Image 1 (cartoon, helix red, strand yellow):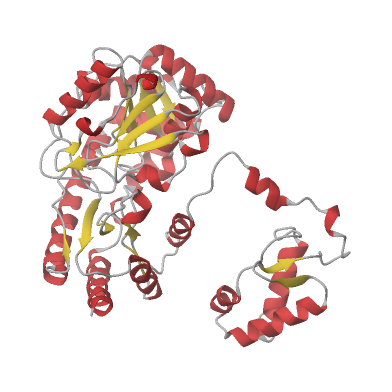
Image 2: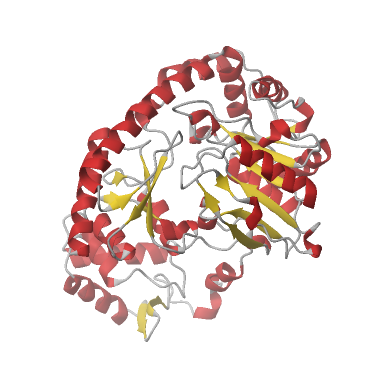
Length: 473
């Protein structure tokens, strides 16, 4: 109905959602404001459409609950004939993301926004031509393939074993598990290694607070203090019953969201604390290769002589999130356990992606690609630091990251971050507030210099500056 009146288009849209089962009985439909924004009309037009649907007996307004679907379009079946999906959704084991995180995830697919939040490389840095060559080579040499062995494609694990030696980690292919990104690695650990009621110690702030990987499995998150050298082990408060019910998670290289690089001394202190208190460590090292000024210290896993560290790596930040390839390195009994759970979950990561990843490593082109990425990230970081000094000096404080994607900004004037977020989004700018990372004190935001173009980075930061001045005035 492209030429029908707007209110008729809204009616047809809602009827199709109901008829197709996308909005079953009991569903709360979008607010009048959301519908008005979606169809670019005023609210009176939306109200006209809703009144007609109410008259048809399809929806009704309920005090305190919004507007609810009460019948379906083709037979007006009684409500009890349709499953109450809301109860199933509420009863699910995995906790939903926070509302703000859901909004950000949706907004990050909106190409019209200036993406100051996105934690991935710009399309400009994606090696499209080389990736095409890799895939063509894999396709040319490809035989019929089915499910891989539980730990993953052996040539990829062999290539990773060699690659890991370059950062001081000596791991045989049998102690490496291929996973579909770092997030799956954490999910497998939550399911297979920890029991409900366990404590997960972690940096605070941390991107894990924006997820519910461990909380959904009934675990308690215990945030730890950080300084300019990283997580502070003396802030860990162990109790006697934690000996088999606690684990430490840390993101030591260019931490998300703060960009902090953990010092060599601090890594040694954390490892010593781990050994003293029998506390296992999850070392999430997905940003390691994105150093700008100098290579980071060796991983804790490289210093681990007692099998206390589970090490996570990934191609998602350095190459392509769409490849969906990451890895876990750990003691063989742990890897066996996690590989069994992975087989129960998805029967293995993509065979094609694993072969392409192996080709990147064995060809030597991955290291060349990383050199180019580091050069471009340095240009982008320095550009953004210049813009920040020009536009936000006196309005915000920040540290210079030595690598990674992010600059952690502390906003100095007293402003409402919720209002700043909403005003920025209305002007086409998306940033991540510090609150979603568990930052409880002060007003912070995470700014990414990796994805948006330099032109958009300057435009976005300039407009942020204007909004902060307006809101604090």
